[in-house]
Amino acid sequence: AAGVIQSPRHLIKEKRETATLKCYPIPRHDTVYWYQQGPGQDPQFLISFYEKMQSDKGSIPDRFSAQQFSDYHSELNMSSLELGDSALYFCASSLKSGTDNNEQFFGPGTRLTVL
Amino acid sequence: AQSVTQLGSHVSVSEGALVLLRCNYSSSVPPYLFWYVQYPNQGLQLLLKYTSAATLVKGINGFEAEFKKSETSFHLTKPSAHMSDAAEYFCAVRLGGYNKLIFGAGTRLAVHP
Image (cartoon, rainbow over all chains, first blue to last red; front, top):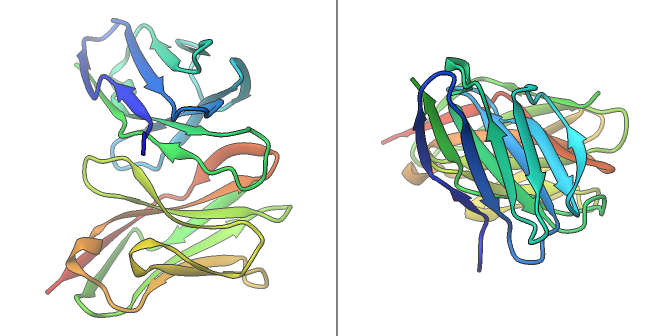
């Protein structure tokens, strides 16, 4: 079965640079979530989209932005990168946001290292 | 506000021994509760979930969890640990109308021979 695809899997950037992370949800899934997991930390919710509209927002810095496109893939754009942005970024997808029992399926993550 | 607390950041068991990973939740409404496993350098895999059906939930790899409302707990158990169970385990809560997951701090399970 098709899973959530994230690219790139690894990314190394310098401070103050920009980065774009991509997420391709499971086919027919209409909701995408982004989570950030720092070293030794639990995943923290950043932002989610349902049918290309932002549906919820968590602890996402103003330097970050995200969107969901017409094909339901999503991109997380990160600017003015800081050392503290080094983390594993997960994307998850689900079907029919707001429906009980909808399960989130996680991608393998993108490991971002800021030097 | 919803939250989960995982007691014990590290748990070590012998192969074949009982695995018990503790999770307590806080929620003002009936919660949806999940257990995820994360192997080194990998993503999150769903072990099991509670969605207000049966209070005893069976998951993959022989794991199960029991929802106890009176104790606000959702502990994860496995009767006999296997070396391959060594991983990080996260308990998470989701409010029905808001779909973001709120994770606990995680418990690292070590299994020794």
